[in-house]
Amino acid sequence: MDVDLTGAYWRKSSYSGSGGTCVEVADGFIGMMPVRDSKDPSGPPLLFSSAAWQSFVAAVRTGELDAR
Image (cartoon, rainbow, N blue to C red; front, side, top):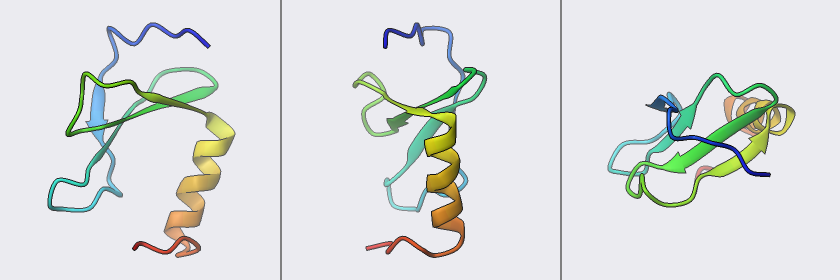
């Protein structure tokens, strides 16, 4: 999937940890969630479907995923 992210507004995810382990997301893309590593903003972003991203966030919130 080819998506133009040049005008994307990236924000640090509220679930990112401290100490440089940050994930940035770009809202406003219908049906998908672009995600990138804040330490490598020029690196390739990952694109997740909105449903997959919502499932991931729900699993983080409920502690279903191990934080290690």
